[in-house]
Image 1 (cartoon, rainbow, N blue to C red):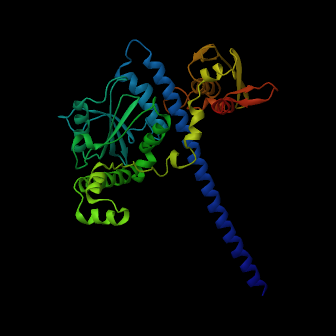
Image 2 (cartoon, rainbow, N blue to C red):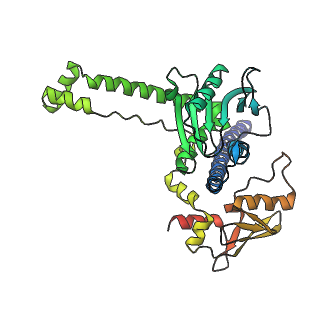
Image 3 (cartoon, one colour):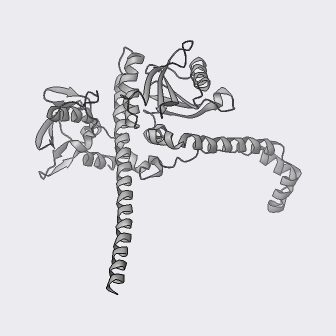
Amino acid sequence: MSYEHTGCSRGYAEVRTTHLTSYVKRVVLVKSQEAFVDSLAQALNDLRENIISLKKRTKPIGEANTKATLIEPLLAALGWNITNIDEVVREFKLSQRYDPVDYALLLDKEPCLFIEAKALKHSLDDVKWVKQTVNYANNAGVEWCVLTNGDDYHIYRSNAPVSLENKLFRRVKITESYSEAMEVLALLTKENLTKGTLNSQWDTYFARTALKEALVEVLQAPPLALVKAVKEKTSLKPSLIRSLLGDARIQVELPKISGTPSSQKHRKAKFAFQDVTLRDLINKGLLKPPCRIFAVYHKERLEATIERDGSVVFQGNHYKSLSLAGGCARNSVIGPPKDGRKYYQTNGWTFWRIEDEEGKAITLHKLREQASRT
């Protein structure tokens, strides 16, 4: 009797432990996804500020600088290891008779997406570049390709059985629509390409587009059965029904992207604070420069100053963003990253703190949220 009781207790404990372990794994996964989304959101915000600043220069920055300062940081934020040539290959050549494409993203050491880069402010509407990029990918058996100038991103399905202009699946401009950029560019994460999210999204979009074209054709010359069905519901004259159906507009919405920030907790309301810059905080009177900010990292107190122009000064060096200053501040404590990066990717808004009027230390992220509500 006591043996059976002990066995039941052990079995119950094992079941509880299994459920607890499963729950912990789910919590860890959700937290990990949220951290990744936050990191991507911060990276896009930093890129947006950088693009705006670079576009103000009178001298073009060129293609090489566009790749180094805008495209590669985005690839890293999307989960691609830009220092691993088994994941990201620069100047990829299909064969000697072809010119290289700027980037090939690899899964299991096989190309899954090509990226052709142009200099910032360079137009991406030139059919020559579109045709070259799409055909190169199609000839290589790579289904997806991207044409970008670091701000605009055009995503093409290279092997789609449609005309060249209809191969364009998504296009987005980082400096124009932050929330849309977050949603669209998240399609290019290593995780989503591994899961085939782009393919499933295209299949849905392609089916909806085909349905729209079929409906438009039917409504332009509605069959008698359709006219009769509408007449029974409305009592309208057949001639009026045909006229109204011919004028009807059919709209196809792009499919919602499951597993991306827009379908999780990062909806438009949450994006509002991401558009707030240091200059906005200064203009709203939430920061009164020059003001001292600080961070405690590995038990060391690090101090910096926010200047009137929105720059951040740390150890005598001026930085254009909190995140860059935060990454360099971490370098000063533990040294630079060993993977070749110049500094650690850091969310400066949560890294740096400031004392409020009551002397309480709060993150600049809190000020940012406050500014978005005013």
